[in-house]
Length: 268
Image (cartoon, rainbow, N blue to C red; front, side, top):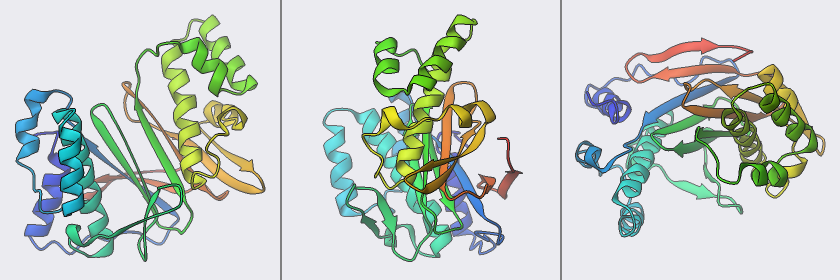
């Protein structure tokens, strides 16, 4: 099985075999993390093109066509991410993937009426989906770790004073700056998503240092508490999860063949 379409292929197999054993949540406060690899070169698009297009709506096909006019690779990555999202959520809602109907908030963030809270993020080669068992909003963000152009300008523009000091101290002690800076940026983006985008524009006021130092931390903004923690996605990626509320959720890493790959508590 091609690793770049393995997640969706496993979901298709479950559906074709009439596998009804999928149990969404155990009753605990959980966040399920699903991952889907994406093509990173055009010579990988043949496998991607063989995927099931039936899960997408007419509007989604039209959007893919528009993206294709500028980049076939980006169009196929968007398509794989969308099919992945639909097929995973269909398992929770006991619907056909095409029957999933997304609504959109004032900020453009998608949500499901009568379905679980979820957050999707994708970057070069990887797509990550977080689904929670509670009604608390959440946000996930993943980024491919790479050197940043105008790194100092980004540090000055988007980081709080404490975050800037933390990053600069690490650089002075010999640590690689890109991975730490991406950790700060993904933490902020996940926090903004969990706020329902209400914190958009507050980049320089959102201080994530304690969460980064402790791997997880309760943060507060305007009387609302958030649990922010990092996710391990391998050395090439930086990822963060933020859930509204002060309770630490149980993180479940999902495996398409066996439902749940592993469980992790605090200190991810």
